[in-house]
Length: 538
Image 1 (cartoon, rainbow, N blue to C red):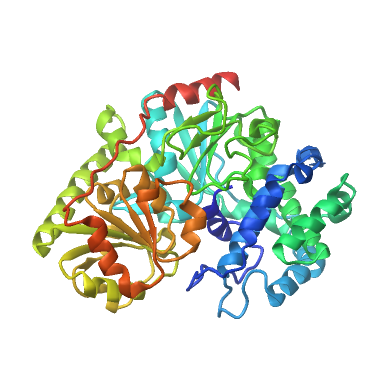
Image 2 (cartoon, rainbow, N blue to C red):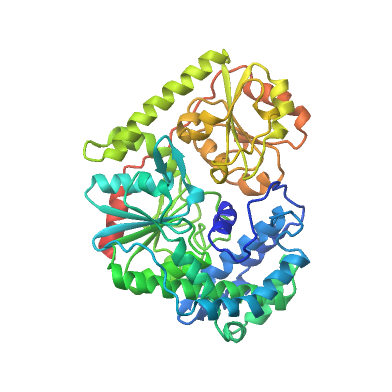
């Protein structure tokens, strides 16, 4: 499970219709994530759990991912509209119980005869890519999900056709017509129907009968600060969504045919676990592409046993954000470490023969234009040192004001989160001085990192991407230590909560240099053969 995906999944699994991105994601000192990671890593808690099945679906990938996700959301205080209800508090728990015992039954009764109106492209002999709009953004006139568009572009050049599904977008969304690797389809109607039809009688009783489950759930509930009964109900709801999602995608694969491979982000959640199980039922191999900081207790984390490929609700192989494999046998052919894969997009486009790929040709032109625009803006400011700022969802960047005031000779590229692209979220204070947001938000991330000396954030996963390029990050939230301390070099992460001292720290960290010495990303040349081997095995 990837930490950042816990927030991304809120837009996919609408288990609370009022849930939105938080205006303030300041983490609370509750330590649920640490406790859950330790719990999941304890062999006596895993021994029986890894063999549990529910209606022939392996339960462990969903359980471990859901517990980690819930711990993250509770620790950061994920808010509902108005901010009165946060994940984990009594009002939120009451909403979960009401949904489980009453609302879900009503939804199911009203929706049991409905069908989802989604576009059904032929999937035969195609590679199917599955993403969320939160992991994509409009760059110029192109809609790009870099973690998937890198392998999709490489495989298109090799002759493989593709179809991309965005599970949380409606089909009428105009951005789908501007996808880098068309065709792209919106599957939100299908996901919504799966959610509506997710009620199933007896699910809680089934999971309670799993050998050792009740003792396991009791221990997990203590780590999370919930009652055992509540956690059983919450997990039963996730299981129902997984089963319902599988049923919907069973029908889609029956109608659309069988892709040679499915590539997805966010494996292990209720929707993607159900989708993965449906693919495996058809003999379709599944590849996960990392996107964010991985928990050390995730099913796909190095050294985990059983191997993730042994579960029918988990992927068969993994393209990892790691720079090298640690903890796994070196001959594990199911894992390919390439670093943050989206950073490879400009190089992939530059190296490939894209004459027959019009969108990629347009991207190559866009990259040239954006490089020129960034150069021009920097020249106009006269600043010799540039800093990239990565914002969290809903962040208005007001916390930046004293930092920018203390560093008047530095240029701040303020990059809004993908969830806020169409929102006016920035405060006027944050846009004073040498700060630029519009160009930074619409530019391809690698282009910004190539020119910056330091990355500044609260706790964005761009920390990993900056680290992969040898760029230091200064984070203002202690939560960043938990996320990234073991994942980037010690000299590339500084955490300071006192905003007033940050200008001095930055000046000392940079030591007067104009540009930090960037590192070289791992070679991505093996990704085509890695994917083709997986296809051939399937």
